[in-house]
Image 1 (cartoon, rainbow, N blue to C red):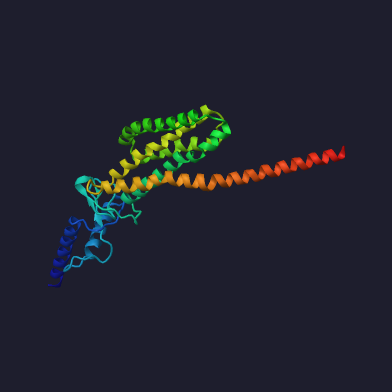
Image 2 (cartoon, rainbow, N blue to C red):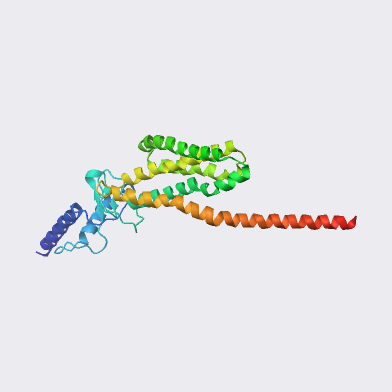
Length: 278
């Protein structure tokens, strides 16, 4: 009699567990490939045992089951299996894979790319004076930067379809970092044109960013996700103007100006000593 009642409770717990899995309650991500079939079976049994038969409550976190063909076993967000396990909610405080980690990686990489793209903007007036360039040269360099962005955005769409947004975003950041680091070596107008053209590649990160979030969230929340990552990423341009134009450049200018004054003072002292010796 006791064994029969235990079997009934276990059967009812298993049914409750299946009902909860169909209801898409909160679940935790777990790579499917790293778990053996026996481990998954044992995990399901332990999950079923944590279900309260009467109230269908869980003792701990409520896992969200992934599709059979998914790379993951569980998620921390509710997902829509009919839309390839895309998340139907956004939790900005979470960094769990794959949805929210991709969300934060997309806007932060977009932020860094725009920071590089706009880092030269507050320095254009100083570059113009230092290299003795005309306004036409500065205007042409700005056109080259915009042209590089337009061309790369056109190419970035098919590239994301083929290689994925993550690889494309890494490519953008690496390629755009090289001309950004070489900005200080520019000494001609042609060099400025080349640097700004290749720095404009960073502007194509917008395409990869939007593609990345669109592939992680359902159409019901994709607009909100895209708006958040685009807004936060675009802050990189404004932060670049503040950091470079208002902080770093004045600081470096003050440091080098002090060094030049010190050198000129030393030269004057040396010239005075030479005159006294004569």
